[in-house]
Amino acid sequence: MTVSAPAPDLDDMRAIIAQHTHLEGPLLPILHAFQDVFGHVPESATPLIAEALNISRAELHGVISFYHDFRENPAGRHVLKICRAEACQAVGGDALADATLRKLGIDWHGTTANGAVTVEPVYCLGLCACGPAAMMDDKVIGRVDGAKLDQLLAEVGA
Image (spheres, rainbow, N blue to C red):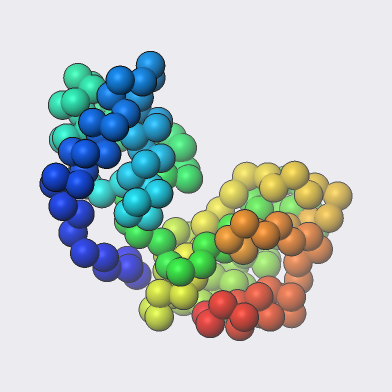
């Protein structure tokens, strides 16, 4: 599911770009600003950014897709990131992730039908000794099992 949001206004998007074009290497600050304001980098912003920075849309897409914290669609009210790195996989991270996605009825980067949670993979949260690890919004959690994850999901209304 993709959470719908009002279409960004062209003047607002042009203003965001103009606030950053004086910077050296303005692309990442512009993308962060879009992410902060809209919760994602709207597709309609792509031609504006590419034209302002004199780069191709392909180059811009490459940057947006390289940094997985940039989204092309709005996320749910909460973002759950489940660690997919080897240390977490070794202690049940794959099974935990599969069970969570199946329970929520979504795939990676999907959002629950009520818009409560978006689930994303992450490749190391720095809790390798306490895996499987997850992060709900900005809170990192170690030794996550099915019961703990169920509790977290219930707390955020998933």
